[in-house]
Image (cartoon, rainbow over all chains, first blue to last red; front, side, top):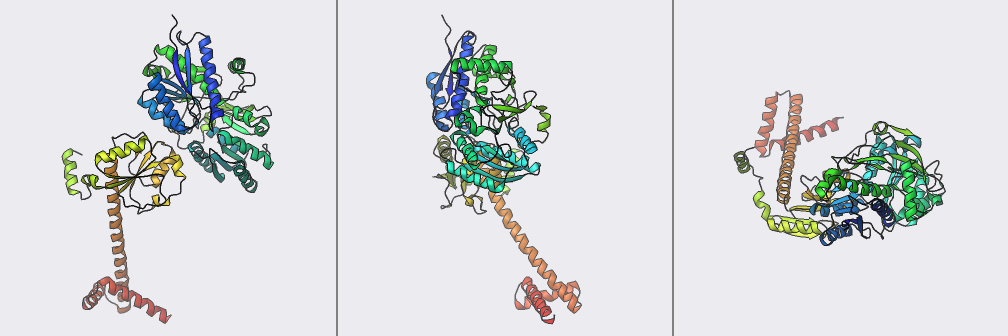
Length: 382
Length: 210
């Protein structure tokens, strides 16, 4: 008799403002599950993903997790995208002692016994990007973000960094996550023409990201002189908005599809074999992918599917991910990850300008950036 | 502090208001969700007068003793300056985020206790008691400071008047003071009134001469 499947829940929106990015994380998780099952499953048991569509609406993430726990008896979950979604899910996974694996970079200042965070904390992406831009483009910054906690908090950190280095903040503008119109972004480009920033710092997420890059192109600015530096713009976003719009702009992430390692090359080849040659990968796809492998490894090493046993095995667990060797921090449940900065090219891929030599310790409670973070990262410009 | 010491302190402390908790009126400014329901239910269990309002009103219309307020990244951008006025009742924030932007907002709101989300019944009574007692103490401190400032001003005027008498009449400091006091008694006015009149008259006189 075949062992029954280990059933896990996936919270990935097919609809709503963050649907495109969540689709990519879902494919990352599905791909890892197919790999694991093809190799004989987890201790002989296949993984089975049960997905729900929370429609990019925080309350629905919580509702679906609760119903999957109560009606389907699930304990392990992947997904959530914005911090608002994760915040809504947090009390539910704590109340039922479930485990949520969260694959997205976020602003930090959270720890839950019942969540493992596999995306970047600001010391992996925001601080290195800020330093890189200030070193290479100048210190007059115009900040544009979506109206929610991640942009607020990231801009606070970036402002600190800017002031410590004697820079000038030319403005800090927020546009609604939903329904920001192309003309709203066009107005900000008029501001940019007046203020002449050294670069635009963007934390615009979701569907309206394309409006920003379109408005920039329409204004006729040159990315070689005054680029958009973004923590959020990925290969998937660039594919969606058109590679010509992304070309020349800068982003920071733990992973780019262009990471040149045998493991990443093989991973992408296998992924495209299964999901189609046109597929691109990105930072959240990669985190969603390796966190399924982390869970499988933890279940095997715990020899149990009890949440407490799996959590114990998870702490300190390492995995050879496409970005490099990552490790779950035993104390803060975030992950040691690589730090990279890339410039988008004409193919919608990132030419890597900088990368850390090893995975950096996650620092979710860093109130102020330390200036030596940059050098202590022991990175090398490429 | 031992329990006995705590009891003793409480007896001596006029601001100990834990017994008033049942009489206070609480305004809950919170969305209609699990946290909001838990807050209201627990406040009613405690026995407070509870009123609910959402979204955050543009101004405070009713008289309340304390406000329990949902503070979220979204609510930070709403324009509600009355929350920061000195006359606004004390605020107990309910927070789901512990980010620096939220903590900065709590500092601005002058909060002295906080309810973390998800809201549990435990902790609300303590937060109410501490917040009320701290705000009473702060009000009393402010009154005290105002009184002291007033007294300081009086002393300064009397001092100025004495110096005028010393310089123009060659009096000793004690004689100068006695002169002011005698005038005050004769005219049935406080000493500072006489001192004030003298200082003013002296100023006018000097202006006229210059």
